[in-house]
Length: 54
Image 1 (tube, rainbow, N blue to C red):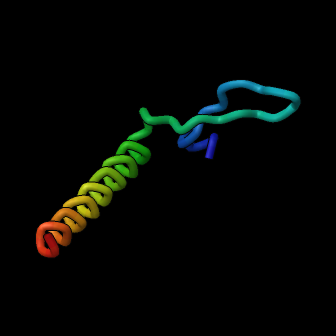
Image 2 (cartoon, one colour; image 1 turned 180 degrees about the vertical axis):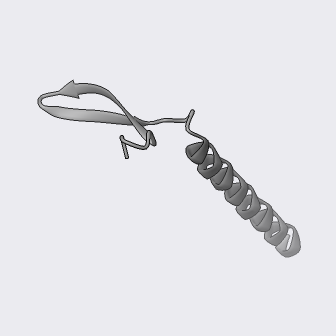
Image 3 (tube, rainbow, N blue to C red; image 1 turned 60 degrees about the horizontal axis):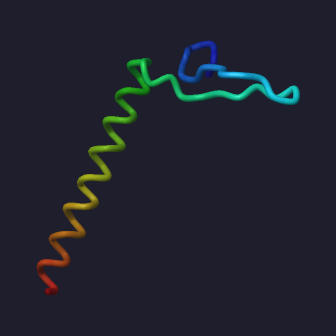
């Protein structure tokens, strides 16, 4: 994952390497975009159900 730059090492603590997601990677940007889309779709569906039952 570090080789294709989906994650970036940030620091080493106690012999462990800590990582963070590389949000500048185009693949990661698309994954984040997909996640946001799916979350909004779920919210919209739940709102429709609440309006129907209310």
